[in-house]
Every structure is written in structure tokens, then in C-alpha cells.
Image 1 (spheres, rainbow, N blue to C red):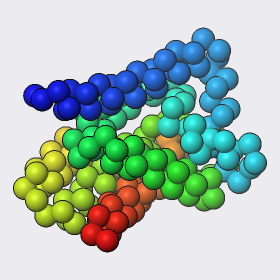
Image 2 (image 1 turned 90 degrees about the vertical axis):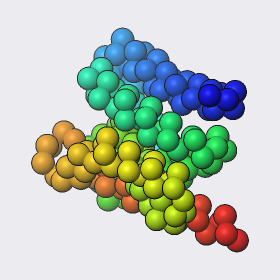
Image 3 (image 1 turned 45 degrees about the vertical axis):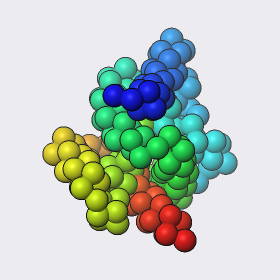
Length: 184
């Protein structure tokens, strides 16, 4: 593994560690920080658009998100650190905005929208890129995490299926934007 790849992996793990540190602070404050999540169609909820992926409802919530976030984020950062940050920002802002506009009236927190966004980006990127590397990454993405697509269904009331859906759509949009800005 070359030095550049190692640095990129450290960035992803650093990103995950920031989320864990915030969750520990949130835990010790009785999860008061979660009120900084997205509360749809409220002025206060606007601040949750960039903040909600860093906030979680419980230790279990952050634990469930850790492996997919690190793995899929790792797959994305293999394309380059700058692209990783661009894709991450697009997913967070687009999915958060859609959630703020159309989500049900409840606080929405967690990195799962970002995870679904990475999933959508990686799968659709293979379609646009058509390289062996992209197809292999898409294959492993679907093989390892395809079952999470059940999270798009409105089955469990405390689960923000809307956040999952809008994250997936934001990831697909990010792949489209990357394709057409790269070719321009």
C-alpha cells in the first residue's frame, strides 16, 4: 500500500473518529446535541443540514453506522481525497436539503443518509465510468451492503427512511455531476 493510499485511509478513519467523539459528548449531555439535527421545515432545522450526519440518537446508532461509513467512505476516497470531500459535501447538502423540505416532522440525525449516498454514488459511478476498477468497487458495494436497501422502505417509525432515500438520490446525483464535470 502506497503512502497516498494510507493517508486517504487515515482521513476516512479520522472522519469516523470525529463522529464517535461527537457521539460521546452527545451521550454525556443526555443526547441534547441531537436537537441540532434536521427538523423539517423549521428555521432551527436548517442548521441540521450540515450537522446531522455527525449526530446520532444513541451509541447503538453510531455503532450500526460505523462499518458501512468507513467501508463505503474508503471506497469513495480511493478515487482521491479531493473527490471524496466534494462527493461528501454534495451528499450531505443535497440529502439534508431534501430531508428538510420533505421529511416527516421529527428530528433526523445520523450518518445513514451519507452512507446511502456513498452507496448510490459508487454503484452509479460504475455505470458512468465503465472501468474494471469501478465495476469491482460497485460489485463489492452491492455484495457487502445491498441488504441495506430495505432501509428505503417506511417500516420502522424511528428510522429515517426519508434520509436513506434522499441520501441515495444525492449519491446518484453526485455521480452524475462528477461524470459531466469531469468530461467538460
